[in-house]
Length: 145
Image (cartoon, rainbow, N blue to C red; front, side, top):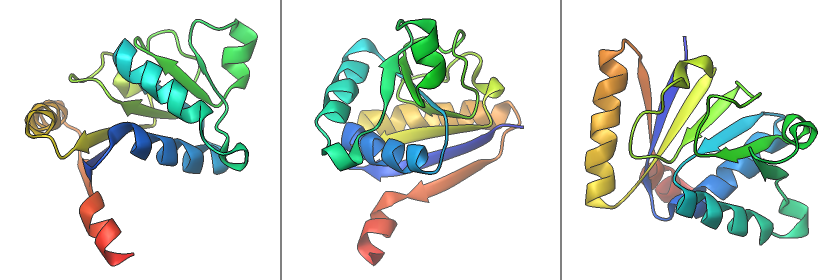
């Protein structure tokens, strides 16, 4: 069964996902990031602006099939055609259809009231589908570091 984790209280969603992806790729994970076009465009730009030692290889799902297969991070608005099935980072406002094909789903939630409200709806939907959820409060992690 897919592991679901919510990472709450991210001050900057895209910056947090950049750090998350750097760590995931460093551990050998294959990750799909799904979201709206604007968010994915910003994430792509921010990933390219990381220092050379922090570079995270990534591509859009529309890239050549050989590139997509070889790249550890795929950015896409639709997850149904992705070759990776290990980790899904959901930046959408809804639960993506087909999420259960992944070993793990990570939901990143900001401090914004509307974002938190939408996250509660996704949480409820996962629970109604029978999934257990792990909650990570990023505020607690930054305060103890």
